[in-house]
Every structure is written in C-alpha cells, then in structure tokens.
Image (cartoon, rainbow, N blue to C red; front, side, top):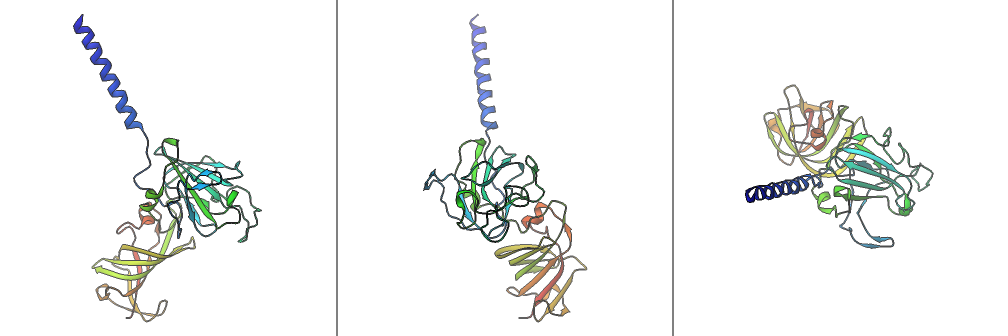
Length: 296
C-alpha cells in the first residue's frame, strides 16, 4: 500500500513538473530580432514610460517623414483599429511568435498638408490592397506613418508598442536598436533592381564589398540616404565593370581587380525576385549587373 502511495505521489509530481515545463516552453516572447518597423530614416529615443497626459507612455515614438512605409516587425496577421480618437488610425500586428505590435497615429491625410480628410482605410492609413485580418510576411508594408489621433498637427511619427504574450507593453527600445533595417520593401517574389551608391571596401574575383550610403529601389521608386551599410555583392561573369569620370557618364571597361578601397562606386543589381535575404542585404544575396567605378 505504501508503495502504491509513493508511486502515486511520484506520478503526480512528474505530471506537475511536465505541466510546468510545458507552460514555460509555451510562454511566448518577442523574436530575438525583428524587422525595423519603418523603411528609411526614423529617429527615436527611449521614451517608454515617460509621463504623458493620458498616463505613462506605453511605446516609443519614431519620428519619420509623412507616409513613410510602416513594415511588419514579424510575420503574423493584421487587425485594423479605427475606433480610437486618441490613437487615430491604428493597426495591430498579431505576430506568429505570440507577440502583439501596435502601430499608432498612421496617416489620415489626402495631401502633403495636415488636411485630416482621409479615412482609416487601405491606401491612406493602411497599405494599398491590405485587408483587415490578412496574413503578412515579415517586412511587408502594412501602413503609412502619419499624425492621426492626438498627434494631429505634431511631427508625423509612428507610436510603436510591443506586447509579449499579447499582454502588457514592454520597452521595445533594445529590439529597435538591434532590428534589421531593410534596403527596400516589395511583395515576396516581385521583381526588383537596386542602385547602390557608396565606396569600395574590398574586392575579390567575383564580388565587391562596398559601404553603401544611398540605395534606390525600382520599380518601387524607394530611396534611402545616409545608410552606412556594408554590403557584399556578387559580381558574376558577364556583369559589366567600367570606369567613369562622373556618375552616369560614359565608361571604359576595366577589370574588377582595378577597384581600390575608398573609390566611389555606383552599382546596379540584376533584376531578381524579392526575397527577405535580398531585402536585408545578406552577404551575396544581391548580384551586380553593372559596376561603375568613379575615377579618383
């Protein structure tokens, strides 16, 4: 009888231990690295928890140009929220990690002025063609930065919140600091070409490493400046390598090995389907079709 009780207690303890482990394993947390939620230049400080008129600040305000593209921090499902005078045009991203992200003060203007004539609909506040409840990929365009709600008349910005386990907000500052900044935004599989301007860092037989300061993406007509991104781009056989006196001028064919560190370079990538690796600028994820080296 004693043996039975001991066995029963042991079984109960084992079950409780397993339940505890399952609970811990199932506890969701933000991904170790997210996609930076704004394409291009955005400035911010760690203002989470600051005292505001409505209480303590539950997110971080990211100042950016009006209608800057707001990107999905991770893959998940979107939910439009248009019933808050304070938040204005707002979007929830229910991330696949179990984390919720709040995108607040999205655009509600029809012109470059602060006209407040737009509604919280796709094409104005939310990405063109995006539907409420749609599944989205990491880095997908989901909205446009604005000044709706109680941010009306202030500098356009994205109020960005992070809610692990779909519960209380946590400070997203460190997540933003180490987030992945995309070179461009486009639907996965859509064709793209990039123009990268910067300086040569180093070259190999079939690749060039450059410090890119400007990237322009086509046919999306997206441009980012002041990048300071070091990128390793493949230069396959058949790519044109030339030396030019000025950017855009006629060139003279040269060998890639003639490139020197610090030399100004204008590189066009070959047309290719959009992938997350290409958007991130992963090593050798981009392939050059034209490399123009500016005479020193």
